[in-house]
Image (cartoon, rainbow, N blue to C red):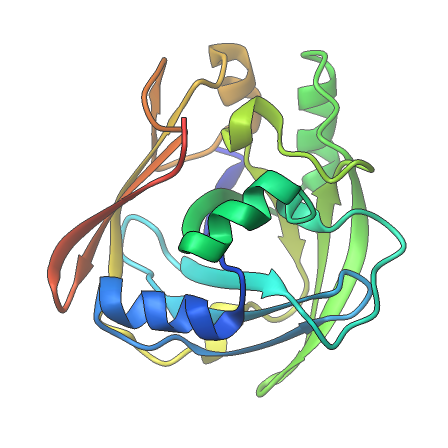
Length: 219
């Protein structure tokens, strides 16, 4: 295993809409997040760690209306007009980010399979616990590969967002990905994930105050 599930990405038209969705769907309000300078986005976070997924969290992300447009496409395909139209109807589970301590090595392993998963770029944002720093891989066009089934890779610095997140009574119990060729799944070395040949790109089962909830992305 060379990578682990870091966080689930739920995209929303606005953070207010995303927070309301979180309370209605999972029974809890997300904690504060921050702004991503240079990407024109902001977020709120929710701890969803469990024994199977240590440090996991859920990120609600939206385009920041007060930020200047970025010089490059936003991550996770957030600039896509069709996606933004769908988000105006309701937020949706969009993607999963995988944590690694060797991002360059994992990107090289994917490249050896003929897949350009992007190059790692440095990023940072302020948090209540201090400055978070990380390296994250992203394609220059901002697109997600294999319908979003290929996780985005991230490598954290000294601090991780989950270190300062309050407990939420929500826990990730199971995560499966559909539509990713087996050689790429092997190159990722992603632990704790079930792999399917078809079905929803992402399917996550969570324990919540409202009982078990399953979130699924588009196919």
